[in-house]
Length: 382
Image (cartoon, rainbow, N blue to C red; front, side, top):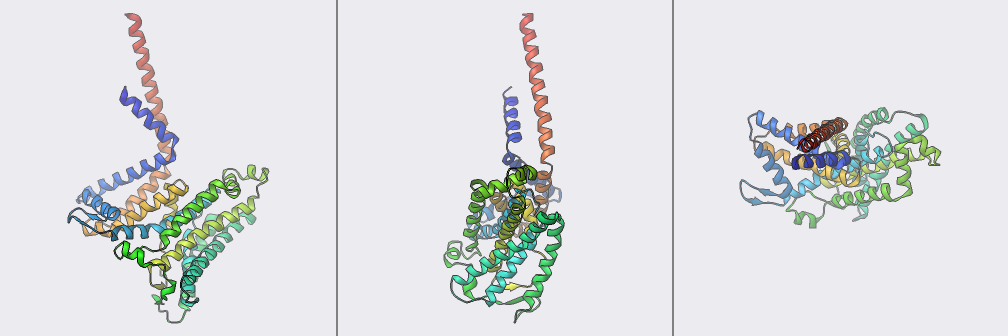
């Protein structure tokens, strides 16, 4: 009876809480990943040792602790969180922003251009580059919002097309800068770098940079805008029902444009942080970095909330950071992508999971009812 009560409480929790379902699907993803590692003849424990080392910096096998691994994990998580926020912000307005990758690329491109050609004044230089990245990302997202609001152009189609426009436009712009070859530009001036000596010393020489503080500020801003302002209320109302929002006096067209512009600003900021924080030179992109596409999964796992998206971004960053450590332990590098993919699949079938839980809950209730009836009959016979 006690086990049935516990099962009932767990089922009710999963039915009420999106966060609980997200935790469940993450656990299912890791469970499937563990089984796959065992099936290919490797020790699943090594996978978790690699993850633990990235999370804490502690190497269990050698008994050595190095905080540098923690710094690299946090640095890798930053673009995932930014691009997750880009997807999540648009989703709260009922939009599906597949264009995070293009907005990220345009932000990265603008940051590199300003870093190479802007005024080499300490602090001001990287601030201008970051602001420029946000503005161009916002413009790139706002274009899609305008087309959607004014002409009912599908944001899915528009963003997919603009992703490729962004990639090749970035190549043209960066290769036009003097000193650039087919791979990279000349090195950035030190005034354009987001790296800080105190963070480097604190994390034993990792690439962790000021982008960490920018992403924390962005998560807080996202939460405040969406939950505590009239603008956020209008965006959420538009996402729930455009017709009802329009009837209530909310400017739906403006809401859609603003939503995509803010989403683009988040992704553009992510591109600027990667450009100036993780690299000391500008890159001529030969392909997409895929942060924008993974950001879709991050937002879905995080239920499009500020804190949830941040936690999901940290999870995906942890898997990325642990990947080379897994390879050193003979774990196939593809396992991290498989786990990410499985998590997304389980999130996508969230409704199916809830239907199963409802069915199971009804079965348990029916079983409990029959048990009570039998107990009552036995009492009457006595």
